[in-house]
Length: 512
Image 1 (spheres, rainbow, N blue to C red):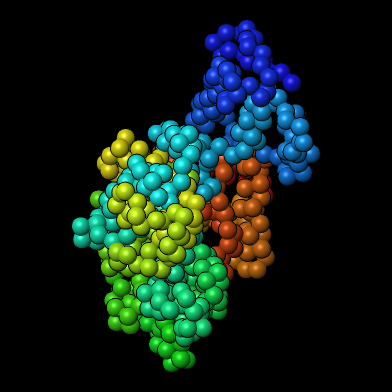
Image 2: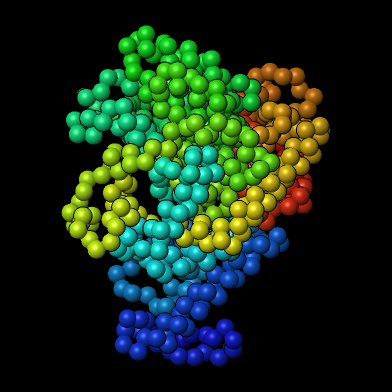
């Protein structure tokens, strides 16, 4: 099995090699370098196309089409090794049939964009290929993580940046940590004896909060019935009086209120719960206050917008995902805790083969024992490198620009024919709206109109994906039928991309 490398600088085929000639094979340096240069060529071409608005956001195919194989791209695994030529084809095709989440017209997820410094950081991280559990094998990364987490705690407003934290595999896990730590704080014996050592514990969270709080309730043995949903106002913010009423009700039933989650930037509406008022109630009833700032935490970097998280410094724990609003490549999520040592108390198992107390360095830098994982990916380097490259001011400019773009969209469509807003004035970059096709504009409100309107956004979205021009999310919420949820977190997006999106919705939806 041979492979002929084609130099990117010439059109001559050079250095035909056996597939197994890559390092660590003897004399494998030359084919390895050539192979990696070919991969870099694939990656740099992809990056160029990502920022080229004339290219598609995606080349959509149905699952059965990809599974059946496309033009030499086959997902099936073989017993025999394939040629390096085929491996390069597979690399190209994997990118070709995927979604360009860095494309300026990809608005589908809270995390989008392609930061070049962050990308470089991820490449270096993969090359170093180490694990975050001890200073012994990740000395520089461990120190970077500690310094960065301290900086984030300072931005929350905890005195001197004191406290604890770590990076976890996403906001859902960060939120789960907060529930685990709260339970350990009030009922430490649960760690050894299990949930039978505690009374019936109750968690409180917004009806608009991320489903990960309910999932944590299920996974940690509280049960989803003991995750009490709180009513919200028309903008999607928790009503503090409802929280207090439900705490009192739970206590009267003999349950033990434990934990309140306040959302800073809800997934659909981008709503910010009133943290100070919730904190007052938590202090009154001695409850753990967690702030889920997975989506909205980045606003702490902006002097113009950080007031939306007013009171966050009163929280016992905070989730903050730099991979969302701040444009750090996936994944990068932090759980930040005000009380030092409680993470280790909750999770440590003192595994003798990893966390030996008699090492030659200060073993307090061995952070792995406070995680629920053993192996932990290095998520810090790309974030640290971006912060070095941008400075705090660069993140602030990025965030302010994204919020300005969402305001531009809101102003553009709030009085435009064919649009109805789900709520007035965005709190974050979330702008939620219905597009009303001409066929529905004269129809009186009622079940028939609602049923037809419910089908509009999914049809437009399907046509968007088929044509590959742009992507934006939609969903129902409570009694509201399907609407578009537009979010901006990509530093490459401009007003022209917002204009394009609206033109595209109108083009695709006009005849529905």
